[in-house]
Image (cartoon, rainbow, N blue to C red; front, side, top):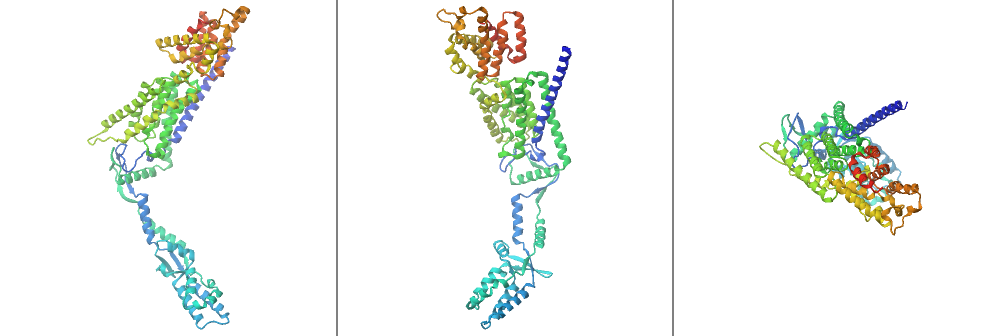
Length: 614
């Protein structure tokens, strides 16, 4: 029954593992595809006066050369400068207002001689010239328009704006007229504003129609590029005309790709491409590095690196941030982290997958793939582990030199008679090399985020003047000296057999920290010949001696020592009491191989050296 239960449990675990990996592949692919550019029009970055960094562009189809926005706006403003708005002349306004004024004048008891005739003639003159509402008149006067079109029935005439009056100007001229100035009090009493009404009414519909007809005559293009015509070559300087042609090409490409069917095909192609690489990467881990898939920290770091760089490339191509090339991105930083915390083969596979996926967001993938692949290989070869800052600087320098050399080699292979190399590319490689130096401080972030332990951390933990080791030297000086001796021996043996000497030495220094709880019960700390075991039974003495291992594990966990150190101490809990028994040795080796397989050799060194003192 128990065998049958195990078979069922194994099958359930298998399906759970498969579903988790499928979900991981789909999630990673979805994030990357979401950020990829949707069309080819976003795959160029260029500026006037700068060299063209891409290959030669040949027109695949005819397309117009569009005017720049500034040129188009200038031509539009020039036409609008001469445009005339339309106003309807209303002949009914004057008779009505003149009649009202006559009635008002008839009610005045005493009128000066000729006053009525003068004011009626003046008001008639203004109405014949045309009166506008004051805000509309001020708007026209402040504009560059010098004429308006006045519609008289079925005819329209152009009239100078300075010959037309506003309601305010009519009122002011009547009050200031030299023939009426003596009767200003009477004019104010009549309240002339009641009889000054606009008879020129703005015709919005006809004005907008005429303006649209005028602007529709402006051509957005100023030339044509024919299919098969060379647009620009590698290394050519982008001038004003080339800039307009390239802008026009992008607009035409975008116009041709805005159909839903084209967008769907592009999206499906991107999804299949990305899914294929993510699936192959997951398959590699399943076949060759299954232990990484069982560690959440390893999975998180690997797939995060694969996502981050393609997303950055996509954003740079989509939005053209600061007009920088994608070559400024330090792609070699990914394999550096994987190499330091995992292994070289996984670092190279991860880097290849990242580069190939990032390339699908670019137009000229060949140069990018070759250059970044070489950069990643150089980074892996030159940096096995980081113990000093100079190592990162040396790696960044080698990456910069190698990318410059391989870029020159690619250009030599592609060049014809007119060999040109974009010097700006070397500035981009230099920026990438400088950004690669950030691997040193970012290593701490990666280490804490994903739960790894770097050589730098192990070196810090090996400092005998800090933390638990300083406390051990004060409480149990004999054990402290013993730990140093074991650490030095273990480090030397690790160097001889190819194990991780820094990890071995650090583990050896901490292997007896549990003796701080009862330091006097261990011979190396006993002074004056006094032995506390003389007052205890054999079982009690054995319990205290054996308990120092579990006490050490508790101390390590309480002081937040790295997981790898805690695992080393936990493994000693099982190994040391039975180390002299051969069968026990093999059983504990199996236990440790299951929990900390990459460090098995390192653990053996510590186990053998520390087993003698248990």
